[in-house]
Length: 212
Image (cartoon, rainbow, N blue to C red; front, side, top):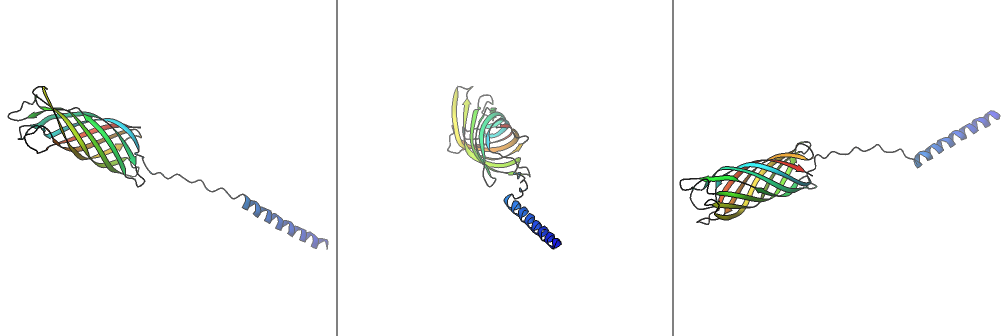
């Protein structure tokens, strides 16, 4: 009889212990495994400033004929802009750049030291897509408006030219702050001309920028 009672008590104790453990487990579930953050690559959003250096060819928006072709066109410049990365990964942005041309023109009737652009301003609106696994290389296209100040007769006469710009570029983030890049831009400008025909020029430049 004692043995049967002992076995019965032992069984009840085991059932009670199991029930208590189950209740404790339900009250305090095991902590889930820590989730690892997903690396979405480099984020292009933010302001930036930089400098550029390029060369320009084409026609001066001065008069009709081919005697006002640009040559020796070295263009140091500075720029400021802002990029925004959209939820689908597309990067949009706006930029303002000022160039300081060191140039003249060639031709039978033109003095290369007498005619040329003395400044150029480009306002650009761009759309691009980052590529590579880390999203550090951005390929983009852009379009906008340009203006240029021209001088003649040893800077005794100045005129303005206005028109559109368009082009493509590539930019690589060396670090989170330092970027290098290259652009090719075309401009179609109308200025002091004897016809209504706009004059075009093309520029290729290298760029260095700091991103905040």
